[in-house]
Amino acid sequence: MASISIERQRLSLDSPDSATSPQSQGALLGPASSSALVLLPDTEAHDPYDLESDDDESDDECDSQLEIQRLPIPPLGSAVVFLYLLSPYLRLGALYITDGGDPISLRYGLLILILAASLSAFCRHLWFMLGRYLRKFTLEDILIEAFVRGRGQGRQHSISRFVISGTTVFFRILLAALYFQDSVNSVLQLVPEDMQSFSLPYISAFLGCLVLVLSISNTVAAKPVIYASTLSTTSYVAWLIAVSHAHATGTLEPITSWSQRGTLWNVYSSIVFACTTTLTVPLSASLAGSLAAWPVKQHRARRFKLLNVSSTALGMLLMLPLIIFTSLHTINLDGKTSEISRDLLVPIFRAMTLSLAIPNIIVSTPMSRFSHMGCRYSPVNPFKFFFVFFAVLLTLASSSVANTLRDLTLVLACSGTAPQSVPASPRSGVSGSRSASRPSLDPLLQRKERYLQRRRLGKRLMWDAGIWLVLIPVCTCAVIWAVGRLIGKW
Image (cartoon, rainbow, N blue to C red; front, top):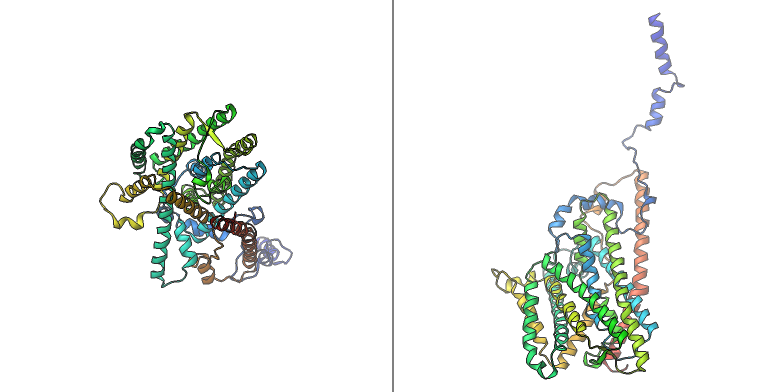
């Protein structure tokens, strides 16, 4: 009986109707082949406008620690990055809005503000995408990658890096000098007119020493620079409150006209200048370094997008009252000269806002390329002394030279904010090499690859359309306007 039962069990296992037969198991496991089942993630739940595709996540996680060590700015928290993204909107460009005497229409002022702020956020996101796509952490590295391609071009790389770095340093010097000069002029408003020429060198020396002390740090992640930027932003808010009170009470006095500031400067160009930015690429890389422990890479990209949009919106809201005050003030005066408050708090907060913003400009300047020209064993980079010396020297320059430098600063600021359409090549050492070395014939993998290519192509076309249909036409109109102003056509 035992042998009969054992034989029946064998027959039941060999029968085709059995649920545990080898044929049914083969049907579940698939045909005997070298290909294995591939579990596709739910790609539909992902953000269709996300910059990075899924095939880049594992590549970026492999060398995240190495990239953190190469960052020009150490990893910063979200609050500090938000501060550095917001502070450029609340500096000299915003302070200039209430200084002009030209009539301004509220409708055109609001239109220029919305357009400039939107383009600023758009350009910041373009720099962010270029930095992540090319794995570059500075503006000069992106430009070199875009215009000097291929291997065996060491000399061209060196020349291009020197030219780009020199232009960046020159622009930062002009910007710091412009801030310093206006802060000195603001303090001079507190001095009697007959003593201003005597007090000018002493005020310049005092503010120069203050800026130099705050600029000793080697990175914007240092606490002195963070505190100075925080106080600068706070001083702008206090200045805005003081100016609002001045416009409400009518305690006003005439100020310098736009013609004494330069050919390209007016209310609208001041709004555009306020929306320029320069530290987008290193700040985004620094934020990604601080979020390197996050398990989902898409959260890091969304964090910078959120900080970019929120800082731009807040900066626009803090500039909006100035445009309203200027338009209403011009209408009430029937085209007369615009004026500012006699209140002593206005020039004090204005000087604090500008002077405390200079350390950020000096410390963030890439001066390592030129460090061999100075003393290597000095505790302070000698070029910081040169920064301060040039800023002090500009306060003593003639009006024609100062106006030319102001116009040049405006042009360089706008040129550095708007990125060009860079046809970046894929990263050769990352996903491209892996896919080439390990070609897959699996239909599921091929279908996923085609889907990722279509999604990336759609995103590229969307951003290219934004560049060619919005950014380039606006920049072209700005260039035509600037040329017309310089030749005196309008």
